[in-house]
Length: 406
Image (cartoon, rainbow, N blue to C red; front, side, top):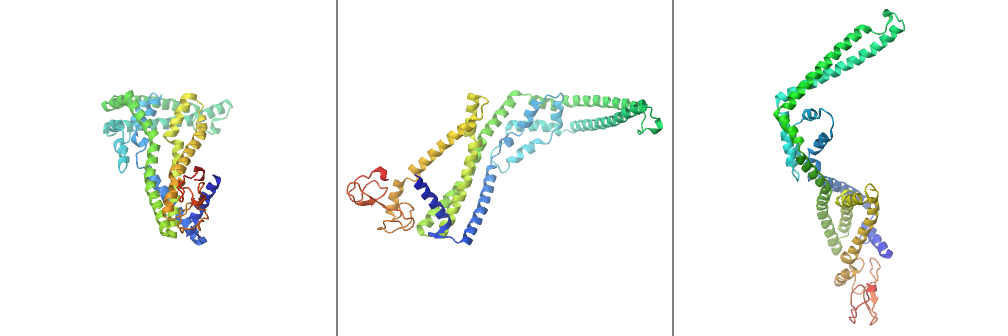
């Protein structure tokens, strides 16, 4: 087993730095590495672009976050606050659909339409602007009062200490400061009453009433929340599918070019196509591992652990430590027994006069491969003549060969 792994590694590095079994010179190797880096950067750029081709959950349900925050808000004026923050939503929500797969939720589009009616009303916007101006006036008056109180407190201390009025560091006397404070406080109170009345007028408008009623529709919100969670669950899987569609044609082309170059003896094409094959596999493996960490499989395991063990979510890591080696074992067995089965490869290679190990062209009577040194034959247990390794029957007597020799 370990000998086979060493041979695979040796063959991997040999394919990466040799042309027709001759070592690549250092300058050419540097050029190959630079090409690899350039292609790898572009592959990752393409993967990032295609992963965004399908609308993400936030783009499909753009109203979910704002709607959820509104429902969680406990402030008394939350109805006014959500009316105040009212950009033109319909166009903003639909914009990501251009050039992308997926559609924006119909409920969110209705949400945007209802809210845009408030935004597009000049009367309502004037009310909101008036409220904003009055709130700014209140802030200004409150800041003035804070400054006056600071001076007022300082004046009182001077007065208690017997400081002469002419030597005071404050420009306003205590009596005048108190008068200004009272006057500003009355203005603030009046402004707050005016703001309250304006808010009531705004909230009483039919468009506002319809929008607030829409916000408080529990069935609508639950539909959006359910859709958002489902989209979040499947989105990593969709991304992996598109990224695989981007990479698989490149892998197939590189692999076909490599096999063609190997058969025809085109060393340079074989070397470049081998490097391309490795480069295309690297992002694919990284994306698969990334999917295992955040995709549907992870969420499935997370939900099971959460249901069975409550807050002991660290057990998810234990599950992965056990699960990933099992998956890896299954993949290796599949590759060994199906994809790279020596028996299946041997039959084809013998017919084409190729080495049973490295698949390079050899002479019909070669006992050892001149390329990798692999011994091509094994002694038949029945007639004791030499027959090909990994083939099911002896070429001299037809006796079945022991599977241990395969």
